[in-house]
Amino acid sequence: MNNWWLPYGLKKRLTEKKDYKTDIDVKPIEGIFKTSLHIYIIDVGNSNELCFEIKALQTPQYNIHRFGIFFSDTPRHADVLIVLGPASEKMIAPLQETINQMPKPFGIILIESGEINTGIDIKSLVKENLLAEINNYENPEQIIAVLLKIMNK
Amino acid sequence: MSEQLNITALNNDVISSSNKNPERLLGIFNTAGESKCILFDGKNFIIDCHDKVKSYPIYDIIKNRNSVIGKSEFFGEGVFVFRYGPVTSWLVEPGVFHIYTYGERILGMNIDVSYKSRNIEQRLLGLNPTEAIPLVENICGNFSFSHSLAFTNSIENILGIELNPIIKSYKIIGLELERIYNHLYVFSQLANAAAQKVLTSQIQFLFEESLRTNFIFSQFRYLKKLNNIGKLNFYPDKKTLNTIKERLNKLDSVLKNLYERTLDSKNFLDRLHATSIISPEYALQNSLSGPTLRACGIKEDLRQHDKFYEDLNIPTISFGDSLARLEVRVEEIFESIKIINDKIDFVDKVKGLVPFEEPNVPFENITGSSIGAVESPSGIIADYVELENGKIKNIYISTPSLFGFNAIKDSLPGMIFTDFPFSVDSFGSFFADAAR
Image (tube, rainbow over all chains, first blue to last red; front, side):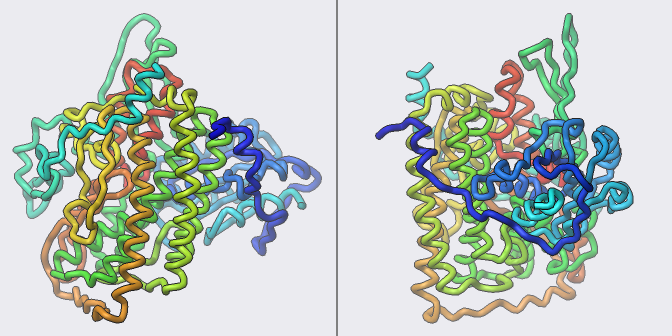
């Protein structure tokens, strides 16, 4: 067996749909972020389900890089902050500091995974830059659709 | 190095296969003004006097489980504390690693889990058991079925409910589906840490596919809102079960191919080999369970004592490093697929032949206490529950991630910074699970 990884990877076609649509209200930032969007993720206390979903968002099925969407390693290089809530008490201050570190203009997407509230409501903290809110999270397609709507794609 | 790698990959020595191991401390709680502890001997859970366990090395960690794990302090020329967290790009979950170092080498560390604390046990008090299930599922989203199952097991024990074999089979399918996607997640994280881009993409693909299989089974990607006391909220039909079987058989063949290539990839194995070695003695003294325990040669699995798991194969490797933990997890995926296939065949065969009755669960006015436990993807989840007049009066939830973080803290010193992700990811520990 040829165990070289490259030919193995090249013969697979794993990417799926070409476009994603959503009914979620999204406020685009006029005139910018049309070709690329750098996102930074902060988990402020969700049950870890959404952290797993962020990993799922990076799987080849979605292949988000083809849309110009990239994950940033620091909030200082990001255009959009994705907040995975609700928040635990101790994460309020780190969230505020992360928002302070974002370069202007920037947007925030707040994602919460359903009706069970295990933490503190943080809408008042993020409302100034809130572009979209996903309350009843279902799957990564929702996040991609929201990001593409921000980019007017 | 490569010679040793081959030895590790093939070494299946079993250090202990007896049903009973030394008693491990899983939790400490107060009831009726007294302090009690939960012990586990490899087969049975024992509630005992708290004084007996004060000398256990894990005692202080359990007593202060909502704060910082470890009390390391290092001083010397050039030694400083590197604080990693609670906001980082690699570790999405909020937790803090306080790492003592003078540069590349890690001297010691303390791990703060408190940033994720949501006081779920406090929130559960006063609820009736069915109201409590959604909250229990949210302790750790990726262990939601295991947490839910441990909780409902404890309530079923209090009510004296014996599960119908068909219902039990459905619950086993849910639990094994949870094990599969969690193990794939750990595999993809380790491949990513080693910059194995093709392997990472291929395993991530399987990870997403397994979440979709969960959705087909339960209408939720994380198997929520399915489990209930003595029953399930709904039962996937024959067509759904056959679809699941087909998807899992496909996963089985693709993963076997990828795993074979992985074990041939010296670059990858070299990063995992001899990283964060756990000895069997340490594992037993520090309450480890699950793949971490089995990766240091101890053949123990809570499922082996369950009559519904016939001929359970327990993968065991003796080296105790990150590679051994990965190997155990991948072998467990193949075993879980086999179990699910068996259970689907069983349900198909006996449905209609065995009376399918859901137990009536009138827990109003019920008073009592019990322990329910489950072998989750990362080890034992044990719930001690006290009911008074049908409401939760007291609950203690023992989670495997707490012991996993303690093992990370103790196994990383001496390693270098680049070993850090291989160590942390290989234990499959999560702050949401540890901090609850």
